[in-house]
Image 1 (tube, rainbow, N blue to C red):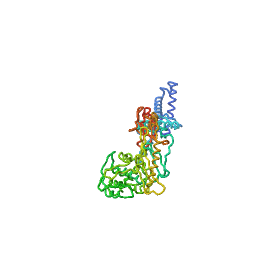
Image 2: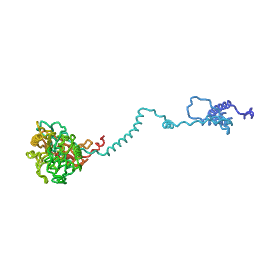
Image 3: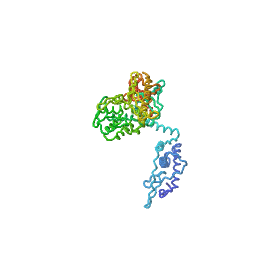
Image 4: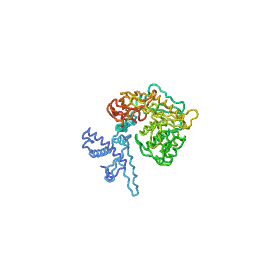
Length: 553
C-alpha cells in the first residue's frame, strides 16, 4: 500500500498486532457484508475497493474458526487464542492444538499418560448411550432377585417331582384292626391248684391257662429224663414204630442195675444189645437211671456222661429254659433243677417226636432180652379215663413229687393236646425216697387235668366276612381284609388269646383284585394255633401320584 515500504509489509507482526488485525477483519467482514446487502455497489459491497481481499480473508478466518469449535456449553467466554502459522506448511493452527515444544537434543520425552480403568458394563452402556445408570431401589432389587431365583426354584421343584415319582414303593404291610388284636372267651375259670409247690398248664395251640407258685429252680428228679430222650431223638431221629440202631450194654450199666437206692433196669448182661426204641422204653417207662447214663455214653462215645450233660444244657438254652440246669442225665443228682414253666417248654417240644408219644403213653411193655415186663410209674393216671398219655414222673427226697403230664380232649372236630407240670409236691411227715410225695403229685395233677377237660370249649373269635385287618401300602392307603371263614379257637372261659396277621406264603402285592387271599389270621400261639385265610374286601391299588409326591419317609 502507499506509504508502506516493502520491508514493513513483509515484517512479521507481533501477537498483539495479530489479535488486532483479526478483530478488525472480523468486524469489517461483518459490516461489509451487511453494507453490501443494504447498499449494492458501495464501498463495502461487491466491486468496492478492497472488497475481494477483505472478504476472502474474513471468509477464510471464519471457516477455520467454525470448523474447530464443538457444540458444547462454555461457562465463560475467553479471548480467542491467536492463530499462528504452522512450523512447516504455514497453515493456521487451531486453538485446540497445543503449541509445539521446541525439540532440543537434551529435551526429555513427555511422560506417558496412564490408560483409564475400564468402566463397569452399566456405566459403559450409560456412557455410550448418554443415559445415566438408574438409581438402586428396593423394587428393582426384589425384581432382580425374583428373576434369578424363580427359575432355580422351578428347576429344584421339577427334580423333586421326578425323584418322588421314580422312588421305589415301600413294601405293603399287614395290620390288625383296632378291635381284633385279641379274643377273650366269655365266662371265668379257676384251676384247682395245689396249696404248695409250683405248676403250669397250657392248651397246645391256644396258649397258657395259667401258673401258680413261685417259679424258682427246684430239683426235678426223674423228670430230667425227658431232656435225655429229647437230646437222643434230636441227634438220632426215629420214625413212628421205627426200632433204630442197636446199642450195646457195657459193664457199667450192668453194675449200676444192681443198685438198691435208685430206679434201674435189672437183669442186664454185658455185651447184650437193644434197639434205640427199646432203650427209650426202658428210660421212660420204669425210669431206668442206668439206661439214662448208658445212652449218654453211647451218644457221645465217651466213658462218662459229662459231654452229654453239656448237650442237655445247650438244648435247654435253645428252648428258652432260662431257669434250668442239668448236672446229670437221670435227675438223681439234686443239682439238676428247673421250673414248671421251663419244663412246659420241654414238654411241648418233645411231644412233637412221632417216636416219643407212643412210648410215654404205654402203661407197661415187654422187651425181648429182659427177664420181666416193665411197668409205668404213672399207670394209674394213664388208666384213669382222662385221656392222659404220659409223660414222666419223678420223686426223691430232694425233689419230693414231680410230674410232667399230657392229655387230650376232643372239642368239635379237633383234639388239642393239654400239657401240664407240677413240681415240689411234698407230704407232711416222713417220706423215704419221695414215694408218698409221688402219690400226692399224681392226685393233684388228676384234679387239674379233669378241671381243664371239663372247662374246655370253642367259640367264634372272628366271623366269616368280618373285617379283621387291612393292607397298609406305606403311603397312607389302607385296604380292608375280611375272613373267608369262621375262626374258632379252643380254650377255657376267661382265657385271652392273641390274634396276629401274617403273609399267605408270599409277600403282599402292590395291587390285586377284590377277593384275592393275601394274608392269614391266627388266634392263639404256636404252630398248632387255628388260622383262616384273609381276602381283600376291595381291589388293592398302587399308591396314587399325589401320595408318591407328598411322601416324606
